[in-house]
Image (cartoon, rainbow, N blue to C red; front, side, top):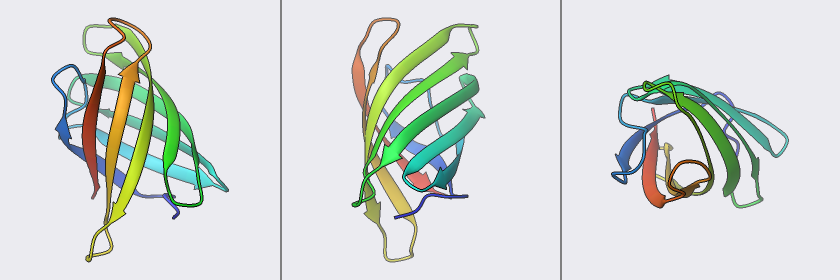
Length: 111
């Protein structure tokens, strides 16, 4: 699975997360290395970097600045699901490595 030039938007997130349907992720992929810039909603600017395995699973690290001016960091594992319309849905399990170190779940859909 290749995520290059695909855009994603969260459709669901845990209450302790900062992304929302207003957050847009723009993915780039070279080989198995995935990067993204993202912003919107509570996120002023964010970046992620990750590795994509042979099944399309993503192991990533992210950092972002929120509207409160806080620098937040975390780790995430994403599992893809390919829909009949060809669009990808990502099921994510994440944990903050800053702040309260809490964890959560989110779902992103390709737009």
